[in-house]
Length: 269
Image (cartoon, rainbow, N blue to C red; front, top):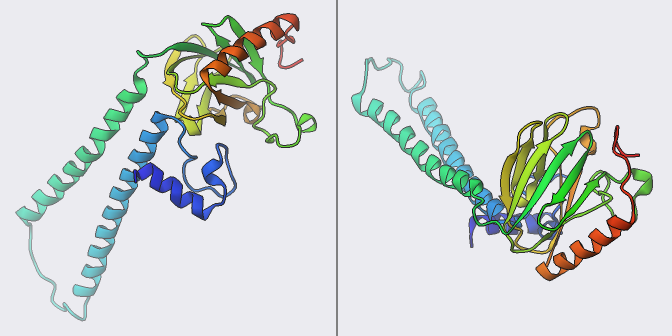
């Protein structure tokens, strides 16, 4: 069983329903279940780093306890006198360097994996505003804005502070290039289940990629303090089969063309 799968299994049996949840839940201690290869790799790296951290903590705590027990005043009334120990000095230099190397190699491999976008089959351009998101499906001639649904407009089953009036629909199993920018201040487009968190910066075009491995609805939020309504910029993604995605783009393009978009000057009208 892979580390990420093991972590998800343990969380699932301790918190009922977590395995099926792609949203924040109360008192969660770990990652949301991975829905992309990037998040799978992040979970595996996190598992490895936590293992190394706990091993070092156990070793240091054990050595500290042994020194307290072995060299206290009752057992060692006359302290030993020494100035150096060449072997120990070599060891405490070489061992940390080796640990850093073990940690660095998979970290760099993950960074390079997260940075590649050369296999993308479609492009999604995202623009951050105060305080909503604009989405442009550049390959399908489709653009729309997505605003948070207010409390008094929520329908049964919709999540407070995470539901938007328009979903970002994406195909499952398709590598997607994501271009991000902003038109006012810095925002950050983050979806934990997909392992994506990229800043949107005015005047710059940042790039990342995502491939969603299973159908479902995934939630995120702006993760860069961007003003008084920073906490009201949710992200709502619905992943569907490729044929359903193509049908959705056609239907949505026709529907939006027949219905004028609301003015976004100063926010939602």
